Length: 109
Length: 113
Image 1 (cartoon, rainbow over the protein chains, first blue to last red):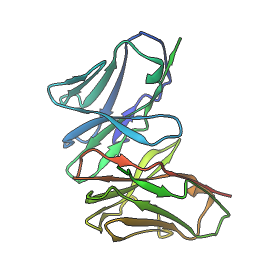
Image 2: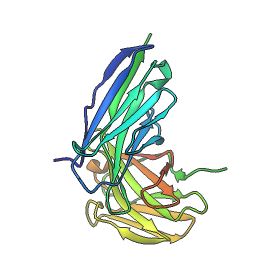
Image 3: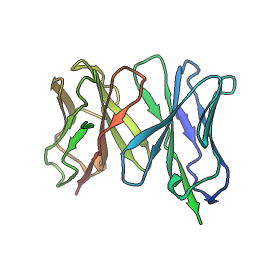
Image 4: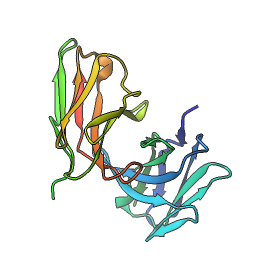
């Protein structure tokens, strides 16, 4: 079983829609959680950290459910520029991050 | 303010040849990571360094792969001999602290024919 699992998509949504991605992780000792964004043929960049109480950054909301071992990302009012691959990332007790294979989002007119 | 710098951006080589990828981390970052990305397996951690010392190389596929960090501002990932299955994008990343925000370089697209 992969340590971090994501639905690869693609999720095709119209501009202005709300879309949500989930990600499950297998290591119950995971301590830190993040969402990274990767544009086509570019490097991954941090989108936001995920905190236990849930957190929001503009149109983006991240939530963590430790009991079920999943994290989620909600994007409201989708923009064309949100089209990208979203990578779920966890960090366990070791000093390294584990990346999911990503969920591709395509926002259309 | 320069980010993580990787070279070359693209590398095309023939099977059996030696390949050397280079990385300059952000100044002051104590952690350096080498990742490989493929469509099938996503981003895989190959090795990481803390203060120039290799900490975990469990992700290095086999003995054909080696990595060094001779000083705080330079690291190399070497593949010798290269094979077609090594074709991938190789990313270098650095961070101030473990499990904190990673800053990635632009990557090296490696094609082994």
